[in-house]
Length: 288
Image (cartoon, rainbow, N blue to C red):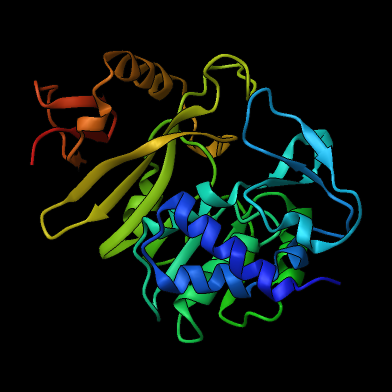
């Protein structure tokens, strides 16, 4: 086999540049965690994030083929993939993780990105990797067996109470910030999640279904700061999908001002000029 260690280091530098990573610990994780251990046996079906999206087969089972900024199919029939490294790692970087922290990764799939998080927080940290699909959770539990700081839970991220967390990364779309995630944040805790459209009867990839923006929320001494990170597209977290919230989100996207958000308000108040997305129990606002 060719120089796999060298390929991992080149891959880490590629993702560092593409995603403009700030965390050196995360770059080291990319260089040291074997991605192939989380994908099942090769050859693999890979996909580059260029439209129209389509799979291509790797010529053989050499892991060198998956050390690139590509999605890798976990179940091609369902279009279920190990996500695009430059995208997923950019969102992980936005959590500003440090060693020893307690982190929740909702929608962990087969565990690769949970392994990167576990590498970053180190042996004194703790990662709770949540996965709704029981078969994927079982695979993640096996794949993460060499990361004792990682705990895999087969469960619903909108119902399973993980306890207090320093950071939460939700890798599934929501029409609104779920109260459980916000309540779980420790002081200065960070939540990164996709705020996406999901109309009733929606199908991912059709019209606006599953498309929206990654949002970063941080608990502060006076409430919650909030910021728009970038556009994104992702499958939904069904427990965090609500028809009325989707309608309000559609209106907010139509106004094209959500990138101006500065805070998330949870207090009961009437709609004001500063309200960008005013929902039940949540409001993204331009107010400081």
